[in-house]
Amino acid sequence: MEEKNIKSIGVLGCGWLGLPLAKQLVTAGYSVRGTTTTKEKLTEIKSAGVSPFLSECTASDCSSLAPFLLGLELLIIAIPPGIRQHPTKRFDLVIEEIIKEVNAHKIRKVIFISSTSVYGQAVGKIDESHEANPDSESGKQLLACEQKLLINPFFESCILRFGGLIGPNRHPVFSLARKGEISNAEGRINLIHRTDCIGLITTCILNFKGKVVYNGVTPYHPSRKKYYTEMAKLAELPIPVFLSTNKKDRVISSAKIQTAFGFRFMVENLLTLN
Image: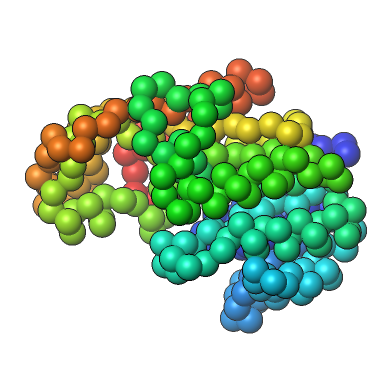
């Protein structure tokens, strides 16, 4: 993997997705910086060959980012909104503060990790031309963040809307099995493995285009009933009861980025717990 123009990359948020991404970028030869909000994680980040920075942005101040941003060529914003855990959180205002710092440090390229939750309750086949109409607070704030980034005149943003994230230590089958019942049995899944999230991000770095939105969903869409039955067996969990209530079927397409860059998904059938 080579990129003749971009050498230094910052990963804002070295969590479940951000740290493995940062490691991959180091392996690819980039100079990489990463942030965390906890002192305990600084050593882990450094051991991955990533320059660690302690920083926590709020809805009123993000000045602690200054040392991290200094001289960066590209910034990846990989911090989750966290609104489900903190319903009153204003993630959109946090992004506003980050944008102020990005402008001040004259960073010209930004990749923002968003979510397909911005499509709300839309059904049918959904691509990037579909109107975003979120119904959750998280989706509404993510869409507001996207819009703030896309209209900024001082840098260009690439927005990646990921489907449901799965990978090591993260799979919805565990929470669904605890519920015992799963609604919308015939609705199809729209998930993506962490490996392919990282692949899509690195593809966007290599072929950076600004003012653009891409969906990131694995083109594997069995019914929820079929998929979670197989996953429950794989995880040795009780098979949930599947209900036909709350009927909603949609397939979110990633054809745009696949066609643009010849991207190929590595984890094709998502039948994995790793």
